[in-house]
Image 1 (cartoon, helix red, strand yellow):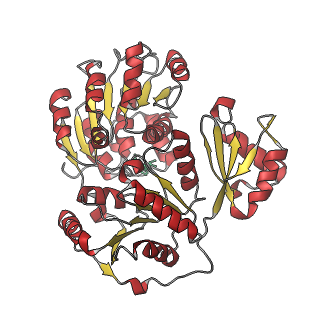
Image 2 (tube, protein in one colour; image 1 turned 45 degrees about the vertical axis):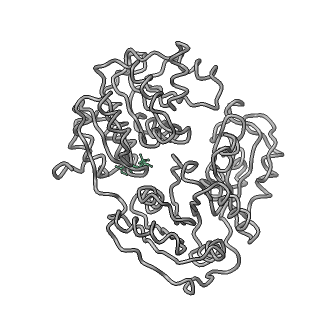
Image 3 (cartoon, helix red, strand yellow; image 1 turned 90 degrees about the vertical axis):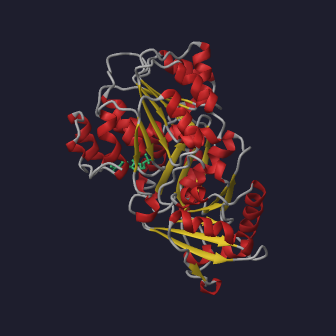
Length: 462
Ligand code: AMP
């Protein structure tokens, strides 16, 4: 832990345009991880920083790599390796946001599941920053479509997750192709032994940065409930009816448990979807879009599948099964209560899970607070329904559809107000648009009868 760090971005030597941009973005003060890591990162030091999604870590490395970038040099100067495509997409969005006040900086995302050809074209057009998953980045290096000779900054984001996913060798291969005099910034929520191996092989006397675990100082309220195998799923339903969170991420330890729980919840009238490994990318995109745009109340996920998801406004996390790994527990519940919002972390434990609960208590150094199932009385009128519904338009990035085109089609002739339309997610072949539940049919009609980008489109209700 460094000594009391400065909290204002203006205390750092950042480009004046960046400072103005940060103020416009509403980043008034640095988050703890930013305050602890930016001075050393801007001074060019290698860093190993302990940080979770939601801590502001992307800006911590994003600001550092942007500061060293020369926009007039058309070569890849920074590479960010991420474990998943979702995280890579989020990192790209955040870097673009941070860079918007600077000259024309090109950020290219390189992930699997997307045709190589388009990526190659983007690289040929000149990229200053590449954000990608190790496998696909390696692929481009092997094909000679990506060169790293001009690289200044290498970032390993969520390094622990990349190691979990077996990317050590890929990371090593990519790193060996970076110039040795680069800066390396490693971010990780946990420190498995592989992190030390990475540090020893690829980093130069890195500064180590930890900020107090966000959980203990955050506004996450943890409640534990004792259940049996027979009452576990029914208890999840009771929690939902009692707390009525708009968005809940429910963790199960196995894929089968996810499937079973989703089946149960759907049968009980909840809007729930499952996210587990083995879903095709398209299915995964669809599930995530529906959850992120608040048209699905509950996302039931395994730990592996949930990696890299960054959904804002997650009111609750439910640990349907207790994880045997206390670090995973902390990671799970850290998904709620972000950025000063309060969050609920509800954990269901049967007698045979009490050992795991004990380990969690020791790890967090806080006693578990147990609540009685009888407290879980239904509140509110009627079933829990999500506020939005999703309309799917057949056509996406390949058809050059942008969110603004869809918004334009819906708000033309003042049929709908901008506030009635939610998140618009454009993927390669399809577009998801959230609208307020009451407007579903009218909006569907408007899309099917009108035009998006001058063309008729087909839309359906999901
Ligand atoms: P991250 O941990 O990088 O995923 O960031 C979590 C969220 O916090 C992102 O939506 C950022 O836009 C936001 N954020 C990052 N830094 C700040 C800051 N200093 N003040 C306010 N919000 C921030």
